[in-house]
Image (cartoon, rainbow, N blue to C red; front, side, top):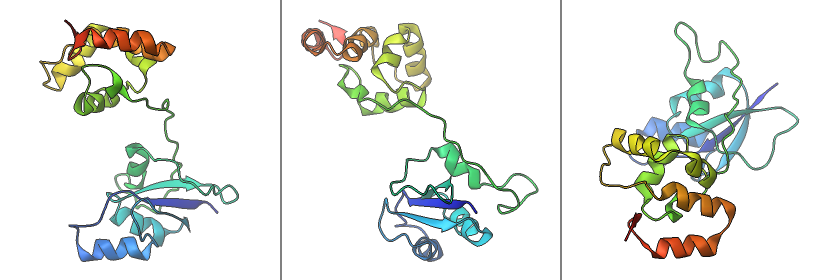
Length: 183
């Protein structure tokens, strides 16, 4: 029988008492703790009730690793039953889409936390992906997010140096930039 790995990802502070009790009854005591339960309708129902506070992934019975991988929002959405079915009616296979390990895009001059988040939402997670993205595409992404002051003209160049590991050249280029623009 399959098992469910349930990870407590968002605090229950500010939510109703019954939701806090459901999190506790699942065996989740601290934020970012993980438990493994049998895949039963009762456990799926509890996980569905607090789906905004936890992430759920299916694991094979034999291969239950100790450390839980991060589940994507798509994996969290697998607990939502389809129209006309119940959550326990069909087993759901959770297969998270593999994305490259994210790199710190904020190292690029002119990219702060907000822009880095917008780039990640657009599917740009690494320096190599940023270097391969056209400046016009970056401008469109920023315009859709209503960020018109940021200038992405040097971002691909900086990202290419970072992706290639040319940190001395990267630092030299950044010393000549002001908010991502050439001085």
